[in-house]
Image (cartoon, rainbow, N blue to C red):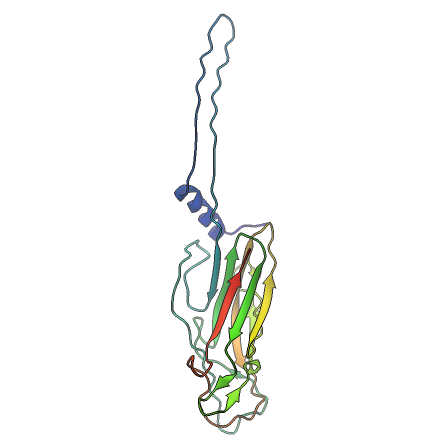
Length: 209
């Protein structure tokens, strides 16, 4: 498997910063004729067990700079008058790549990863009207050369999952996720979602053994 610079850098850093144990011995050989002396060194390399998930704004990962960034993005779909429910998909605005497009990435070294998308209910306008999350579609496109394309869990009003298969326990996948609004329901006017109170938040969770 072609392990990226990011993973090589991470593992190399781990080898430098985590315990590297070495012990040496000495021997003395005497006498006439050919002599042989030997010494031994024992090595231990400790690799950290890690899992990284990014959806939208986040730290660099192709360079091995993995960090927590607490900046959720907002994707907004704005429909034109007279177009509501006509079946013509609407592109979003926002996202770290703009145009309703988000960077998504998963890195791990402990086996298969399960990626879950969880919503707390249909998008609400706060006065009793709702739009189901199935109206928001996610299309994954290749991003970084050498990485597997990360499939997106389809959004629903509850929970959906995708399994990312590891190779030699390594998962290295990313994608550009484009969100679109299907626009196949005739919803009353209003602003749906946008806040946690109106079920506007989807939480992505990665789990690994």
